[in-house]
Image 1 (cartoon, helix red, strand yellow):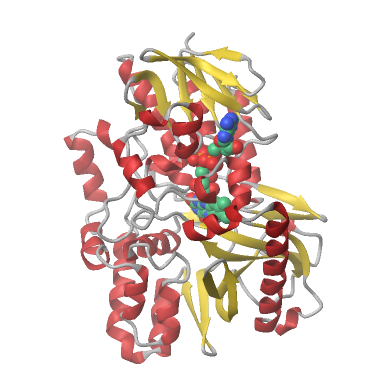
Image 2 (tube, rainbow, N blue to C red; image 1 turned 30 degrees about the vertical axis):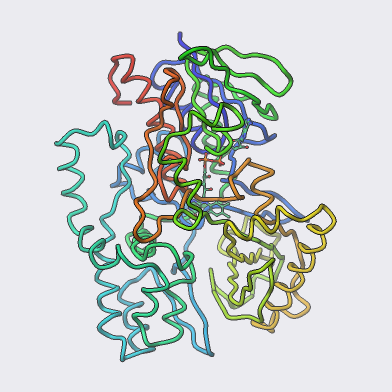
Length: 493
Ligand SMILES: Cc1cc2nc3c(=O)[nH]c(=O)nc-3n(C[C@H](O)[C@H](O)[C@H](O)COP(=O)(O)OP(=O)(O)OC[C@H]3O[C@@H](n4cnc5c(N)ncnc54)[C@H](O)[C@@H]3O)c2cc1C
C-alpha cells in the first residue's frame, strides 16, 4: 500500500490523514507539538479551560456539503450539542449598545430603533445578510477539478451572492461603517473583522450565524481536534506527536520523504504539507518552489495583511451580566507605534465544562496585524515579558472600568500574544487566519501542488483566503483528491 506522510497535525493535516485512509492509502502524521490540533486549541489554567478557537464553525447545518466533511472527519454529527448563544456580537459606544442578533428581524428592529435616520441603509444591510445565507464553501472537490455542471449546481445554490458582491464587494468594513450616521452602528461594522477587510466578509460571516450554519460545538476547540484525531487512529492512522519535521527531502522532481529534527529519515510515496506555507516554502523546502501568487501576497503586506491577537483570559463569576462578545471604547493603549482604543471581551459562560461551578472564563482580544507582530518580534526576552505584563494589566483595568461589577472579582488566568502562535504553530506573523482579502486585490488562492515536485501536495488554511477551519478541513480532503486524480482513480471520497 502506498504511504502518505502528512507534516502538521492541525485540522488540515488530520483531515488529510482521514481522507488518505478512506482513499486506501497508509497515512502517518508528524506533529511538532505534544498535542494535535494546531490553532484549533485550548488549554487548562488554575482549574479553568481556555478555549481558543471556535467562535463559529461554518458547516454545522446538515444540509450543507461541508457538514458531510465535518462528519466524515468525526468533528460533529447528528447528536452534537451546540452552545445556546443568541448573537454574533454587541458593540458599545457613547453610552449606547447595539447587537447583531442571530435573529435578523430582531437586529433590524433594534438598529432602526437606535437610528431611524439609518433605516434605509439598515434594511439594505439586513437584506444582503439574508442573500448571503446561501453562500457555501466548495467542499465536494477543488474548484479547479469542477466541471461546468458542478459550477452550475453551485451557482444555483448561491444565486443571490452576486447581489452581495455588487453592493459590498468593493468597500471595506470601515467604508461600510461610514454609510451609517449612528456612531455606535458605524463602530459595529468594523469591530469584529479588521476595518480593511472587504465588507462582504462581514456580511457572509454574520449570515453564517443567522442561517444556523455557524454553531459552536460544546466542550470547545481542543475537544473537537481530539475527536478528529481519534477518528484517524480508529481508522488505522498513526500520529507522531512531539516530532518536528526539519525537511521535506526532494531529489530531482520527487520527494523521497521527510527528515525529522533528530536527523532520522522517513520514506514516503507522497508527502502532504499541512503546515503554514511561509514555513513550508523556506524552511522545509527551498523558497524557490513557492507559487507566484503566494510570493506576491507575502511581498504586498498592505494588500494582503494577516490577523492575529493579543489575548487575555480571566476567571469571573458566572453571574456576570455581559453575554457573549462585546466591543467597547477604552482609554488608549500603545503597542509599538500603534494606539488601540477599542477592546472586546467574550464570556464563555455558555459552556459549563470550561470552569468550576459558579464561575466562567472571560477572554479579551486586542486584534493585531503585521506591524504589531514586527513590534513584538523586535523585543528582547525581558522587554517582551515586561510589555506583555504591562499590556495585560492595562487591559484588566479597562475591562473593570467598562464593567464595574467585575471589580475585585476578576482573576488573571493567562495572556498570550502573536508571538505565541508563531512559537507554537510556526504561524506566519502569528496569524490565526489566512491572508485578508482587501478591496481591489483578488482573493488569495493557489492549487495545493508544488510545481517541479510531482508527489508533494499542500493543505492548510493558506491555500485559500480567508483561511479558518472550513478551508483547513476541505484542503486536507482536496490534497488527497489531487493524489487520486494523478493516479487516475476516482476522486469521489
Ligand atoms: C483565537 C482564534 C480564534 C479562531 N476562531 C476561528 C473561528 O471561530 N472559526 C474558524 O473557522 N476559524 C477560527 N480560527 C482559525 C483556525 O483555528 C485556523 O484557521 C485553523 O485551525 C488552521 O488549521 P491548519 O491545519 O490549516 O493550520 P494549523 O492549525 O496552523 O496547523 C499546522 C500544524 O503544523 C504543525 N507544525 C508546524 N511546523 C511543524 C513542523 N516543523 N513539524 C511538524 N509539525 C509542524 C503545527 O504545530 C500545527 O499543529 C481561530 C484561530 C484562533 C487562534
